[in-house]
Length: 144
Image 1 (cartoon, rainbow, N blue to C red):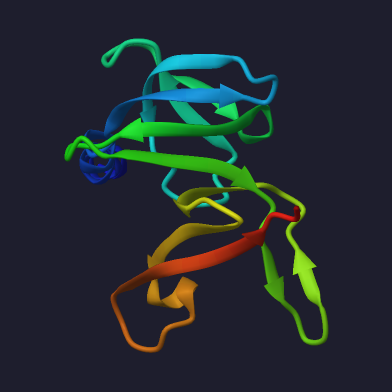
Image 2 (cartoon, rainbow, N blue to C red):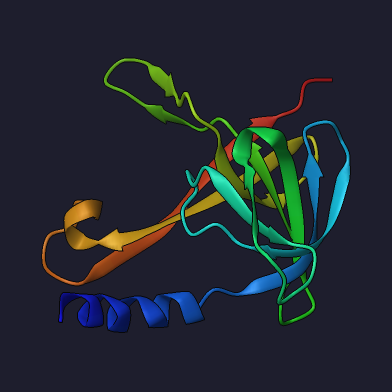
């Protein structure tokens, strides 16, 4: 009975996995063209990649990937990179020890990156019930 309940709960999650046509740029600058699933969370350690849309899924380690770009259903190209994010601590800036996935919002002398986090109200620290989520933006100034 427990297995049946678990199966019923997991099937919708597995069916929602969407792979988009795109290209992965590896850390050594080699390219992998195929189909990519956008990571659910910025700190996911693996990127799901397939050579063929219905093919076998390969999991690429975040540390071996420089970035990737996909073409969404609206025929828009969305670029992602791997970055070390930072957040304001009590008296200093804390830099994460692990890389995160971030989409590129704008590139130029100043780059703007965005991550999205979703979760339940308990994990997000939001009072009340239900789920919550939001964007976090990161700015990087490129020195001349």
